[in-house]
Length: 442
Image (tube, rainbow, N blue to C red; front, side, top):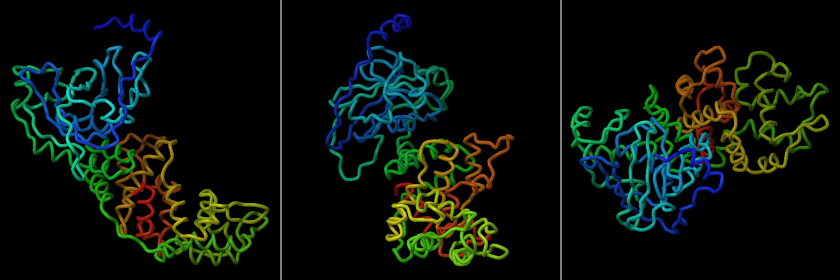
């Protein structure tokens, strides 16, 4: 092993080389042979890979091809081994955040395969599990035309079963015979079936990568089948809603926009809607459908107050000199229901920040998008968030009530052409499902 103290001196003087090639202008298929280094007899796979794949996707292909479970860190390297100073490194997400200067590199997710392999004979190195140290070499054998909508990856040949996870870097036949039921077994059809699984289908469909990552991370949990089914449903062609239908589903939003366009909505001295406006708004805001009591004081109509304040938080209304006025965005949305939908979808797509909010938003949007005219399964979503490690401050699992307090739940509850009674509060309307799809970029 190279002396690490010597490496520290070198790193103070120079950075790692940049060995990447320009990206291709066209998409081709790379036929690549992948060998586990030092395996005797050889353990290898021949895989057709689309040249525009990012290396984080290539990593998932290799995990499937060698029957591993993505339970450890990994990295790619060009020009040498994964810890050689003269190599260029392509890092997994953990290493991007945690690597020290000796291991500086670029994110694998930002690097395309065709930036690392260009001509036959080129080699790319891959290391999986820094303890067992599975070192693999990907060598480009052929550059083939990409015909039609070619798959991301197809295994076309190979030999022998791969070593199982956490077996201690066993690569010789005698050792592997002790931990594998049939070391000579190579199941090409089974591997290719797995390469058509949710992760790859969702990536092909350009689904938000953060959601794809959640589907992958939750793949071995109790609700993984439910989440996979929902995620795959996102790739199906949805029923389209006409503009007139959208108007019906957004009638609560539209009422406020139209009312504010008429010279603004006057407020009381205490900053509430005036009684006459409370009466009219209560007729169209869905969550007011079964509100008990008089509907003429906004201070006593919490769902209406929450809805109105949500419109301000969404940037559609602003308070100015005792009135609610349209923002510039609100003016465009008032005139065009599609502009309103686009704005709502953009605000529903979670921005980087609070990680619980991001993950809860993505899961709720996925289930909503796949659940027109069905109940949003809050208990399932809560269980998935608990599987991701989230807990309440007292250590108890995530509950449905924690989701009902999130802003996007309020939006989705009010995108409907039906009264949002307490019994129907979790029913996702076709309009809400369509909005969730837009929010996910579909």
